[in-house]
Length: 278
Length: 316
Image 1 (tube, chains in turn yellow, brown):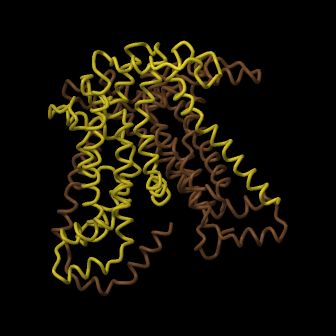
Image 2 (cartoon, helix red, strand yellow):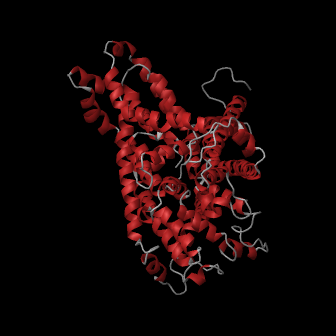
Image 3 (tube, rainbow over the protein chains, first blue to last red):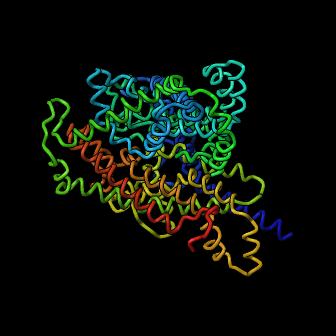
């Protein structure tokens, strides 16, 4: 009997805590259906007169550019980031985990060191390089690093994963005459799927949320991804249209929330095994 | 920590077998070529360049002139730079312990064999994924503005703080709370650590009549100290680099009244606002130095309080 009581008390306690943590999301979701002037000044969560006016104003666009354009830009950046990061990190991960070559230990140490390197040390010279190549205000600076395995977290994640796979698999394939590419493509990659999926999901979300890169490199609103469009919207309206601002924030958050709901298992496992910052 | 031991075992198991195979020299470099290009072009090259630029007056348009240590010296008389160091230091000192304490508390609460644990773990983790985004920063600012939900709630209990977003005394606290809201990532890591603590330890302590608090200080904390150290290191390094939420809340000048002038914000403003790229490079190296010193300091103190259960001859 008292066991049941503790169990119920535990659930009630955890749920109460969870309600506090998730409240901001519920609050903004509700706010998007309230008239702008009703968002502040009241504790009432459920809108008295639900309205779609906020979303309608968002779909009128920002500085004459439709919100669909910003979604598309964000999606292009995110998808290309995923392709580049997964491919380049898997190649590097295989090399570090399985191949023997001179300098491997040193290179691996450099890779680990970059995990702790504040990227601010790199942004100014990187900007200068891309500026000299006339690539500022294109997506190249935002994507180059993705295709060059610059996110050491993912290389490390994949290395750790491959190291746990039994070596007998690739060695027996090699004895049967398989080359490195065959071993990589037909044996290691399929077995690495969980690590690759974790990499893909995190890359998508980080790219979707990225603000700093686009802020530095992009100057034509037509090319803006959502986070930058949101900031532009604040600057254009001085943040006065609360309702539309909440609706646009919500729209920017929804894809990540959906991703999370579908893939939360991979995300949570990925964090607990590799300590990704999330 | 488990993968590492498995790696060690795998390595120990087959050295003889492997040494018969030929080296993979060329293939190794081929597979690694994207990464090698990246590390040279996007990391090592820029590091050297940035170090050089930090000793010049480079402004993006004119050729850089060597000015020696002038940039570094100027920082210490630059009121805004000093302010940004102060803001960042306060933020790191508050956000990291508060977030970690909250993460550990929730992890300990969730660490039981009851149904629904997986669901709760995922639900608490969720905010970590969106917490750093522009959207959430906007929502946060909105919730903490005058007459909004936080203000109203506090008024109910008789506290009138007005809007936190526009008040220099509260704006930084608002960002500390935003960091704490993202407790999910360290929580998941704490949970993994807590699961490794052998239940026999608690049972034995309970038989000996140890109180809850005693069990926490003498069993839980030492047993999870490696995980705690890992989280502390990661969160500290991340906290130094906060940018997006601070920019959305305070803009490039750290509004209100410079209270959110984070180091990264000021660096951005110097580098890309008025193109003082030499100065900004010097600032970036000071940041690297600062983060490096804190990291070394953490590793030093870790010897005193981080215990690996495999250690023989415990230092206690």
